[in-house]
Image 1: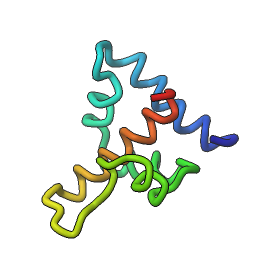
Image 2: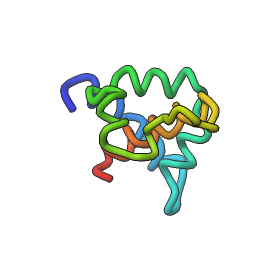
Image 3: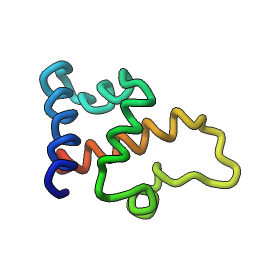
Image 4: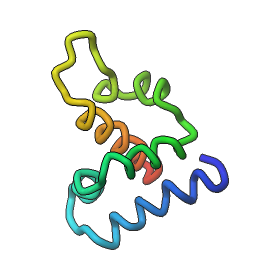
Length: 87
């Protein structure tokens, strides 16, 4: 990640660490975010959505997808934050 984008995304990783304890820290944090907050994180991610879809199966959206838009956005957001954390 580069410059301010890294800082913005990393702020959310830090906030998750500060506010939520346990094994599923980032997942619980993302679950609490509004879709608009997820969109901000995704917009600041230098990786981009095509890279997320190519890198992680759970980020792909198939033609017969049954997940809601919100569920997919949350999965993408979790992937970005996990990547920033090194996961």
